[in-house]
Image 1: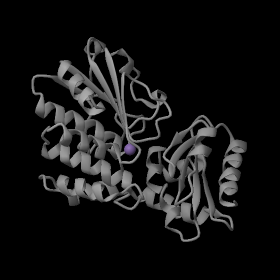
Image 2 (image 1 turned 180 degrees about the vertical axis):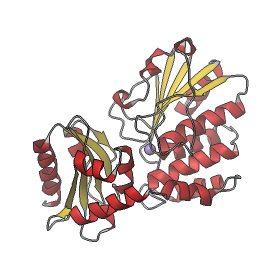
Image 3 (image 1 turned 135 degrees about the vertical axis):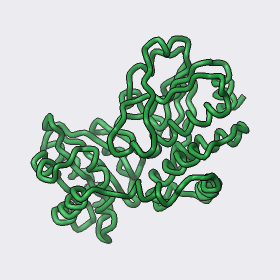
Image 4 (image 1 turned 135 degrees about the horizontal axis):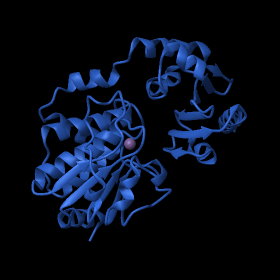
Length: 311
Ligand SMILES: [Mn+2]
């Protein structure tokens, strides 16, 4: 039995299924999570299916989370999508089910759960969900198609990043044949507030780049307060330095309320996820996240980016 068959058997066996995803969700986290929930509701109408996790402002146009009591987890199946490690799962009750399944496309650094379905060769977890449901003969709904499409578009940067394959395009094409307003969805995903636009100006003006293309921007609490922004809204500016021709790899250092820094690392060609792993983080080779306890560690991380580009 292959992994997909094992997963479908588990789904058939349980009456209650709870689906979780990572904290600070992006469109792929919500898309794969709620997309799967919608597919399971449609194909197994007798089962109770819930999508659980803290809702984050800014993505409510995609979906709302379900509120569930602790008892719901008794004898239930829990599936976690798009989440590499247990520390990042939103809502700790994921542990309380009877069986746990991981479905993800990040490097499998922590293979948690009773069943692990990880493929790092797909563009997004949403693409993996689409493959799973197609192979298992499950049917899709218009809204599930909308959610999975949002996940693929989000994780590929609108089909820009190298994880975008011919298969990704075929799957996206199939999703677009369902009824949903794709133009509106793309607009909702791209739209930024005036304050984020002003922060974009700050990013371009304060970006530091060395001769090898190592870039960094520091965004302090004061800067965030000045623009009236939360940490979540800074996600919109992470890809901006990549538009500049002489930037190769970069870090965006965002100071948190506790004085520590959340670090987003991006790169056009050279893997930077080993740097993330050394600094309390991880992720994809070209897009990962780290954490720095103070300015000195931010400096260290930038030195390491410079180091890999200097080879
Ligand atoms: Mn993803």
